[in-house]
Length: 511
Image (cartoon, rainbow, N blue to C red; front, side):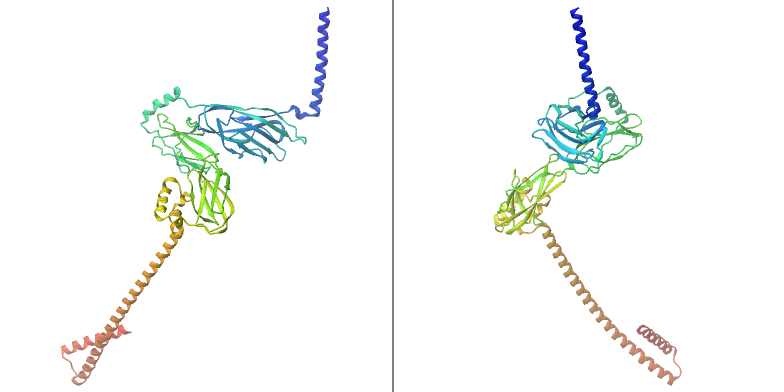
């Protein structure tokens, strides 16, 4: 009986507690409706397998189906020994105004960002915050997670809507040889029946070399189609070996694809003839649109020596171009160090300009005022001709050069204190002078020929005048003889007619 009464006491007490918290929850729901409506952070994709050296993107996403999100801030963690950030893309982000970052540290393995969404804010199932391109460094399990996150509601109070922040887990390991799937075995077995008539090789107009970096985000590809090919399958992704799935039931011979993000990409293509699908061809290409960052000029001394540093996470720094007062200067790049020495610059104030180029051709420029206490000697003043020649040979082997590797000729002509383009200008001027002299000589020769021809014409004219005088006198004589004789013989009449005819022709020519 005592146990039964205790049981009812427990039920009554539980009911009172339930009623108490039920009404508390109901009051909170009425006064603070946003508390019960949540936003979720996630990573897409959130799992997968990669191998060391792969570059792959992950997108940080937010879902808020009930409330408008006004601002988002978070700190994101990744294992720095397994992954490094190659680049961060905000191209498709829902964030309109970034108040912090996004910034990242490959040393600490963190990404920080904070941004505001203007107008009403964001409400939806899949809002992309940003895309991070990672590079796999070593084998292991790479766990990505949010250390801190907040999504403020657009309610005037900044209520935090985050209910969960889901991470991601990627397995990084060396790719193992796998047995081909039955379907793949069947396609490979059928390949021989086409006798090579279903084999294609991918090439690119815009990104021709797979081991080079390009800044163009629009890629154009083409391939030669054997006459027997009737269908094509394509696929673009970041995986080195994939089977294409996008089907074209006609003879597609080229493809233009736009708006690539930074990183390494692959195009996979496969052709089919009347009998079977051919082997899959894989084409790799690399894109880097980010300019070098962190460019700095340090320890610029009055003697013309200074150090330069810059970073580029994707393609890497390729070379520097050094200019003083807008003109390319001759410098020596000490191997293994970013330390430079100016030559041939006068004393006084100058503007030192440093351009850092990455391997995709992206350029960052920094200018700094410097003061030189005295004129800097040219290379010839420092080294004799034999040493200069040795340095020139070393340029082609050890990258000791003018910083711009495409302007080696500037360094070669430095012994004359002349740039390559100055030498070209002098050469063109000399060539113009030679042409002028040739024209003058030719003109004199023509004048001489004209004078000689004029003299010959004068001589011929005198001879002709003499002939005309003889003919005229002869005709006059014959006229007088005719008036006396009254009649010519046949021979005399013939001579008379011929001479009169010659006289008329001469007079006609003179007219």
